Length: 526
Image (cartoon, rainbow, N blue to C red; front, side, top):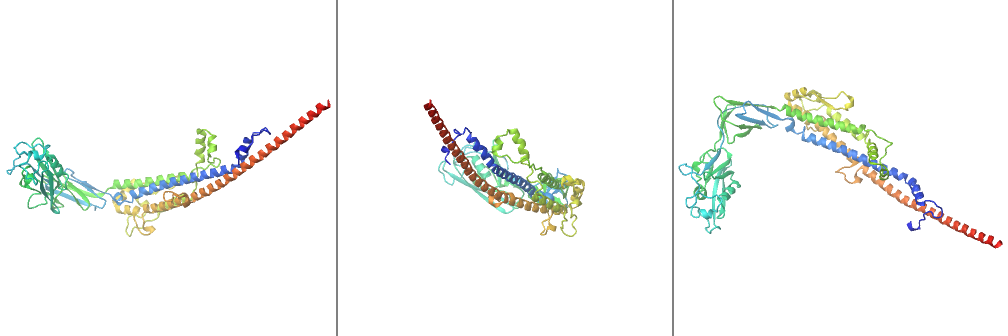
């Protein structure tokens, strides 16, 4: 179509452009319907994906919450005397009790300070017997006291080693420093090594102290820290015979005298921390039992998440669908103000999942999962949720939400917390042997897969991979073909109006010529 050949109604006096626009508006009505259908598919897809996000969130909360044994079989350890002993229990701890008494000695870390061979404190000094400056280079202060490996001014080097003991035996760390290094540099090097000690210089006393990071006695025949004489002994006056500490904790557990290298230790998945020694017949009883409150909170969280999921699904299934409010095309939006658009779209975007079969079937399946019997073996204390105080709301408008009798739930946890865990999280091979939470999670996975097949998602990014995407592609093809037909139709209208204008222009010219001829003839007769 050549735009330059279009006429504008000079001959007919008509607004040809408006005429063509009006005709094309009528011709394009099927395209408007297709654009609205495309928007309906878009809204439906977004609603489906919103529900899939809700289901995925619930599935994650099941996995991170009630299915984790540590959450649903949590144990607590209560000490009768926390001033003496504190305790905590993991989910794998056995229920029972312990008595700790006769704590005659707490575990301590070996430590050593700058002292002479008589055990008297001494300052760290330089070659002149003056107090060593911890921030000045060692070469400038200790040229004669240190046995330098290489004596070349500040390029000099010296070395020493430290031997530590642990449960694996002796471990020796070797160190090398240069003449430019300071005492603080050396202490930093020791602290940042694998020696497992903390060394520091005390400005007030002029002494160095070094302490093991680990408590306990690992060297029955001697000290826990052994120092080479060169720098540690000759300069810092750290001598093994001056070591203190490095003792094991000594106590009785359930009447048996025992020792530990640390004041914090674990027995049968229960962690104990000794805080003080005992006096007289003082003791501490530690009782390990199910952490009823923690387990109940986990189960209540599952119920709340389930009810929230039920509520959001029901909102979509019962959402009103307004047939008289189709989606707005861009042209229609341009003719409305913001308030009108907002009010219209509130209805035009509603109800696309009303009575949806995927959501309905998923909801029905999960309700069945909740109340089918769980077979966790002979003698299991519980096989139905109702037996631990969880029932369905009697209000039909609640769409199967769960209600909890917390007192009955607490009693069930106290009676057999393991049976409660299995009721929710048993991982048997058959459906009957799976706990209700695992069943619900598997049903969620199936529902999410069905939604993805219909509306796509992260696992199906290409429109060709899901139903709505293919429908949208087909609709795009139809709209493109229709647009091409509309272009030809518009060209045809313009062509018709152009010929009409040309014909009328010719007729007008002929009429004008005849008038002129007749006017000429009349003048001649006179």
